[in-house]
Amino acid sequence: MTRLTDDDVKSISDTLDELDAMLREKAGRGLKSIACEAAGIPQNMIDPRVFEIAVVPITSGLGVISRFSESVRDACKWLGFDAYVTEGTDVTGFAEAVDRKASMIFMADDYQYVAYNTAANRQADNSTGTAMGYVACLDASAGGVRGKEVLILGAGRVGSRAARLLRDKGADVVIADIDKPKAEAVAASVPGISVADDIDSAISSHDLILNASPAHVSSYLIRDGAIISSPGVPHTFDEAAYAKATIIHDPLVIGTAAMLMMSASYSQHGIKR
Ligand code: 2YJ
Image 1 (cartoon, rainbow, N blue to C red):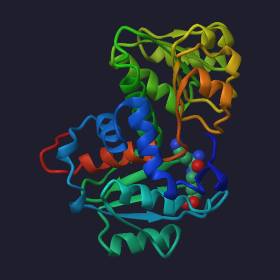
Image 2: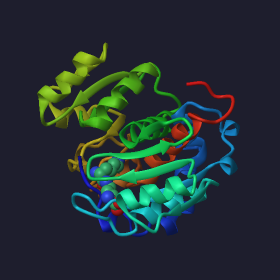
Image 3: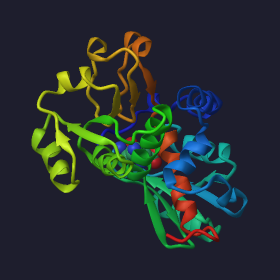
Image 4: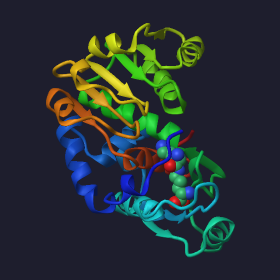
């Protein structure tokens, strides 16, 4: 799994309005609407005022990413939730969040990023949130994916979850990975999915792409008018790619917002999961 860098997150807090505007332009819906759609809940079912979110910086493994916790906090606040970063890190920060009766606790190490709903004793994980968020973006931008062919690049945690979600939405899913057996394993576990033989020709023959890989996609392969919903980091699409295609990307917020709504829905009155 690709780890975010200080650079990936440094301007997130200051660009949340821009992200919302980008989504409105490219997907026809704002961040909150995409996040609720992704989590499968109506927007008015979540009352952000009843939640208090603690974000705990985690120093284990490769350590704290500068402004990661603050970016998560600010994204939650932007969505109308009360949120703070704990003073302590790791177990000390977790204990602080519990003492302050946080209703959700967000924390990420190098492998997992979760939103733990304390009342429901359930967590939403970011790979699922990211897959849900970017599938919702692709679906909204394409005017629905039902009956359309969608290429997924990357058969990792996000790509494999996206495969199932897109299939559930009635898309014809083709999956590609440089590690072909990985793509074949996803195809074997999700009925009706096929595996691309050649990645480059798959890219140049698809109008709808969900890019859940860290690989560089060369602009000359991209079709004019393609829609690329792209959680993959690093994000290396160049100007030529942006000129040809509608590309939806942010390094953290779309996945965080979907995960937040999913976690909130576990304890919100009136929603049964
Ligand atoms: O608390 C911190 O600042 C760090 N421990 C954050 C680590 C962030 N984790 C990652 O970047 C992992 N690769 C998981 C991210 C999932 C994003 N979809």
